[in-house]
Image (cartoon, rainbow, N blue to C red; front, side):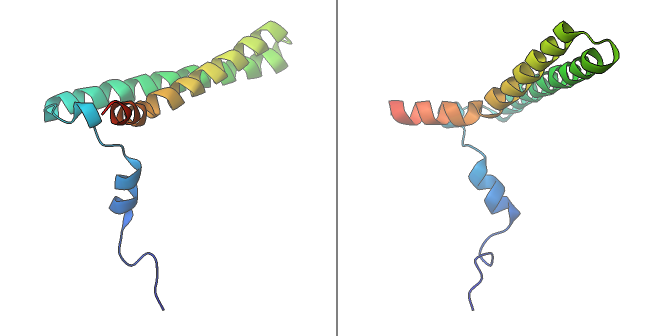
Length: 102
């Protein structure tokens, strides 16, 4: 009996998902950490916008019966989650574009 999970572990899975740095491979370690910190802060900001939108939608739809506020909340949720997706996939997008250019 052969098990598919014998050869790898969680670092193999995570390493397969994480993009390589492509054109930014020659950056120093400090520059990479700085880029990662900026991206993490941007993701947290986008998640905060999405949470604020969810609260605004919930309060506007139930407590105040304000449909305009509820619609604004929906827009903030979509904007925040879209921002998280775009920022989260920037490394992969840069790698794909760099690979197509080479």
